[in-house]
Amino acid sequence: MIVVGGEALVDLVPAPSTVLGELGPLLPRPGGGPYNTAIAAGRLGAPVAFLSRVSTDGFGTAIIERLVDSKVGVDLVQRGPEPTTLAVVTLATDGSAHYTFYVQGTADRLVTDPGPLPDDVTTIALGTLSLVLEPGASAYETVLRRESARDRLTVLDPNIRTGLIADPAAYRARFTAWLPDVRVLKVSEEDARWLADIPDDADLEPALRDWLTAGVSVIVLTRGGAGLTAYTAKDRVDVPAAPSRVVDTIGAGDTVHGALLTWLHRKGVRDAADLALVDRPGWSDALGFAARAAAVTVGRVGAQPPYAEEL
Image (cartoon, rainbow, N blue to C red):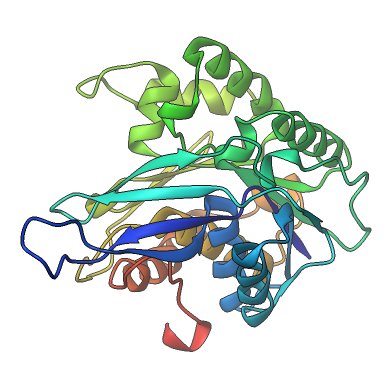
């Protein structure tokens, strides 16, 4: 069983305006990095459960219903009367998404430590706002360290949202402290540069190698239209992006994350020892599978990961 922990929220995605000079309507769509990741894994056929706190409001009800429809277990979901986090999306001309978040007093940031996860859990995946916003961030950090000590396969996608990080230096230090407990680090090139605090024209690979030395077994770097790269202590594997018609990029990285979790589970990767056995052709296959899944998502409005039969 895979457990994905983190926030579930509602993306308010702009639709075209029908009146000259007026803003178009905002369409509510369930989202959030970890939530999208769990949805992607569930739709691709992996046994997955979601760990979070979800509001009892109307948005929260829709969030739960979509999890169930996507074959994601909800036994670890906590419920509360606090409102659902909102993310207002702005789309650039190339389809890239930018977010403004409304997070004060919302349900997902108030998640509490569930204690040791069930014995059938093999993988725990965390990321995005849930590792920034307290008090939930500390609860998820506790889960990460405890499950890592139990030799579970731990996967992290920081998915940086700079507008919510008040102290970048402190967050970078905290991120570095997580690395000994992270087996797979999935990160975008943009986020990796921000975390390493290096400019766009600097060589990124030395920083990635430092993270591998710190304890990470594999880094999967997403490079947008340039494709995906996997780094291990001894190797580098590059795979091009799959052909697609980009509508927007909402949920693309989360789909990559969910597809990787699915591929690793299908191949029987349950801990660090199993992960070390994945060879170069294996990583090429894993990245290709993730690229094909993401190509479907970017061709749709909002975060709509594919089902297995669509691949």
